[in-house]
Image 1 (tube, rainbow, N blue to C red):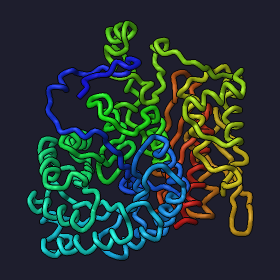
Image 2 (image 1 turned 60 degrees about the vertical axis):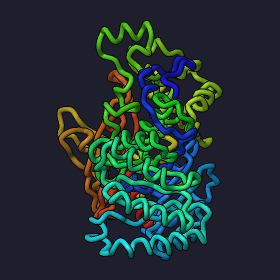
Image 3 (image 1 turned 180 degrees about the vertical axis):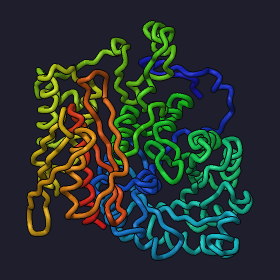
Image 4 (image 1 turned 30 degrees about the vertical axis):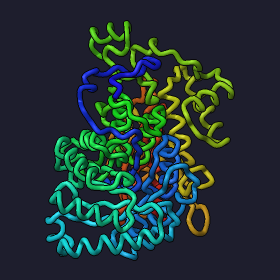
Length: 537
């Protein structure tokens, strides 16, 4: 096992890793469940269009298996699974099902590549949730895994709450699943209640008991903050597939974070994967925008402070050699450097008000941004507009602008469009008047409303919500704004969460150098998402 790499001076980590004996596989595969377990995060919900966008980005990042959802849960999940299956991705598209024919048939109908079936096995779940005996569960595993294998060549079986299941019974349940035809066995730490050493023992015991042709998978939750550590312990003991989510989203405290596990396997273990590491940061930022969950500043690798240095001692050493206080380069994961040490990193292409189309296209291609012709035109206009105002456009600015432009519905697909906004402030009570167009069944309607507030942002946001009231009552659950980069001319990035009278919760976001406009546009983007979600559901 390699202790550190010297290629491009990307990584420098502890050589003592070599002293740890382990049963590392030659290749580790990534199973992303952001669209299934991740969407179970409280107050997170994706439209079908957003799920397609996430699936494409995961595929571009090299994820091997994408769990598109659980088709039987809702019409929206069913349609999303069906559409993701038709994208022609390189990744395997898999659907989740309980051990019953109805659930399995729904996955079959969605024409998915594979199926992931599960049933709980801990005595706690058997007694208080399933009201079944161990013998009944084993019979169910045998019959329903066999049924799934009649329809799919690849069947993955999960014994839910595996780490609180008596180990001998867990091995027995997994063995029966394999004998019934399962090709992969997943060991979930469903409520995150095991330590890395103990989890490694559970994985190793199952690895020894099952045929070498059967891949062991691990699915770890973060209730005690151990999900990434447990996932790596599983790999150390022979697991070949790791379940993760982008930003670690998921039930309760979430799942193992994709970026942390992927970067650790590369930098700390030297294990081969199919991951395109340069996409990790961009994938994280996409999930931040679509989920409405702000990345904590101290979040490993992709947080705002991950590559920032405050101490003078650190800064001086960094100038001599960045690896003194950075175990890996930000470029490795596609992270744009924005601190005072930017002179350490040279960029082959700069972007500003004088950038031509070829230069901007080259930079966007370097960043891995996909766009339509109209989106490119808008990105170009916004970059030049910032330049005309005297602002230097940083790489982080460009990422924010491109995410903002490519992440929202095209105007022809929108159902809510802001036509005009007037805001009065200063010596008068802040007042805003908004005029929007709303597309209803009988065509477009133009509506106007005014509101006052404690400040221009409050007044502007209130005017938008007021003008929408005739369609449905809305509650602003969350409002956050941050400066993308330093300076008073920085882009303002606003994210909001809205809830309507039906209980639907949606997120919206926008970036603009005027915080009033970024605030208002984030509301409008949220309203568009809400209208799409109403139609889908």
